[in-house]
Image (cartoon, rainbow, N blue to C red; front, side):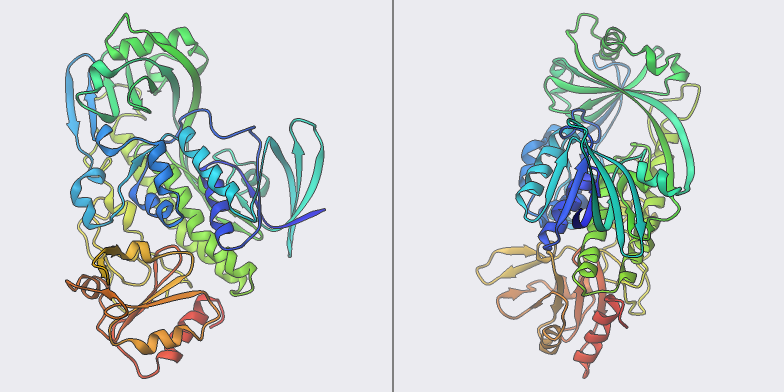
Length: 534
């Protein structure tokens, strides 16, 4: 029987990212996916700036951007009667506005899932010691106190084999067989509305080139649907929501009907349309009651299923495994207690619940759940959820409070106030290297913990060297790294003798605003607590 530290079930963006993250930490994993290759349908498309920060830290950003569309090709959100007809409303989402550069040096990206997955697969396969097996069915599993025994079947030959893993990540989608086998309760609303995605080829540039948008919402008396930009020239998606309210069933969607609806929505009866695929689906808004089940851990859609209104599904899943994998690596390397894994549930489930709730609110505001048509549009928060993207504040045993109050904002969905309070995302701040070039604190975060000490914080650097945890220690104001305008000190809330410890997932674990005479003991106690060994 083959043995592996981590078995990953599911080869979508979440599973592929988990494979990549574990490999970068030297953890061997086996990923199994029942399909013969990566996605053939666009599915998710919007990758928000927080997820792009993660891809940047893993060295994947450039290839993801090359596979997607530049921001200027998708700058608007449009509501219209038809593509060729009256325009009702036009928005520029806050996520793509220049002022977002104050928050992050990384911009969001529109990259359809069938373009994204091959990029992630290439990177995951390049990383030793990962193994990826497509066309492999996960059929059953049993777990005990020391691991999981899974049964796999080769879909070509039918051959079966047993795999033993210390831990298993279930990234097997919204209909997760692993979650079903565990009997995990999903809390929320199931099957809130039905939809069909139509993938097609047609030249829509006469109606789109002058107003490039990620989404073109079509609202008229005969049809309600959405054009989804894929390559912005001849490859598009068309989404029909609320089938019942429009007099359709999923089985009605033949290539002929699909092409006819695309022409109707375009307002171009003679448009040449080639239908490439038809994918019915049903949106739900519910979250797993528990993410961690012994040696089995749920991630992505297996842990939370949300309406796509807002584009949070893929992003939340990638951010799940970014939170999980450094913890899993430390446990497998014997550098942390298994109790650290509980913090994955404690931190990510509140985020999953909040994002699912707001995605559902978006859908309600757009009339997706109503039997009757409403006025075109969406609530003001839609695609302006900056607070939801960056403002998560974790509370768990992997965060050491410093007694400071959380930042206060009027609207936690749309507003984000950067803060280095423990539990929050480490803020972006520009610093200057010795050669005059700028570097963002975002780019200093990597696979290890990051200790940033002030110009008088030498004692913290000495203390960091005594830890058995991987800690990269730097001193701001010394050794060629300058806080020229004071933004790091102000933004991170530390004096020259203070220090901040940032986790490998970019969230602040601990902070000492000022110097202390017992730096070694103070930092050592903090690191021990993060290891579950307080």
